[in-house]
Image (tube, rainbow, N blue to C red):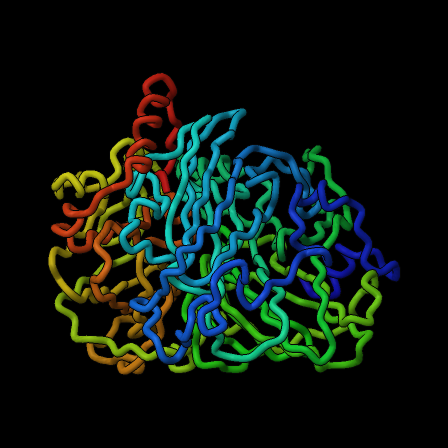
Length: 593
């Protein structure tokens, strides 16, 4: 669809931007996407400020972020109640799962070195489901059991039960939290996580999170069921694309016979720029499958961080984000006049992803603009290259340098797929399709000295190796955003075909991040230092792919896991889950994660 056609479908000509639905109807109790959404401070001040900052004299360039996290002693407490609800983010009514009645969920915020204490109450009913929350991108050193992955670090939080996660804000920057129970996060369980730390570039105003999410009108369970059932639909198409949980939908395009309530011009997200000031935007791809290409008409962006890794600033017109990835950008309001308005755009790359309506819009208003006016700006002329890759590795250089060491072991993990004997399409990683056992978390078994597991748990035991290098070969026609828990991967190389076994991009300081795209018919080479004993998931972050088994567990320094104490509260999740499943049958239709 052309941009002209999109305008015709989602806006009433000549009438400006009209919201026909209330914020409560579209997004519940959330304020994201409204002009009332808060800005964020450089750091929280209700705490000690040694040398004027919560992190004292630590800097982005002078201190290793993996070994220098401060011990502030400050607790940041949050209380989450998870329930079902009915909202219409794009005007199409849908049953979802919400955090505190909000979509997207509320922000959690801390200074680098603070401790989060977050209690999750599982009040999902009609029907009941388990849940678990993952705090995406944090290292969880010493608190592996708080990583929030059922069957790996805990049992699911049983219906009617509660669990308190306690963990350190051990890195800083922008991220998100989400359910890691089946594809539940695609049903609405997502929210932003902001951790303040040292700056690597100056700016004036922190506008906070910009959530980019592909959006499906079917509920997540129905989609997963259709993906994994015999002769099912392994390639579901999204119905829309949202910015901060909002976008219009042309209700005339509903399928014949679809009687779901639908309102045109439900409302799009709006942002306020202050003329002449530089704004920080925290871009987060919290979608299920769609690869996003983000831009702002007429405004160049300065990239200052990828995932939880500050980078040497570079300028671009378009930022590419795969599912799970984050990019922090700086944008200066120095185009036009104080009464100007511009389009913010995020387009799902239809070369790389599947979407019936891939183009999302939000409005940016300078401080003197009419906030009901329709922007008349023009998109940058930057064609989609169709390579389904992130920015070039020689462009994305970490602000703090860490050289890639000679690995003590190297292992290949090939991505493939097959159709099993029942006609179900499954993905494999390293030759195995993963299947979870919610009642027996691998970390607990390792803590007891049990290092022998069923093949379908796909555990890769790296023993006492000090440095692990993984070569991911992807001979499939799909790209995959590969996410590693517990670490930032050093990205040594990516490209088409097979790796030559030698070439490393900037060995003295390779890119680091926790999600990296491996292109179709290509390869990805990454490396970690084994400084974080645990069982760490490594998986594709496309919801339907991990549901189909594209997942492995990295068992790191198993002998040291035996010496770690697992919090009693984490073990309590299994007591409650086992009691629940003794009388209830859990419909685990997919891999479980």
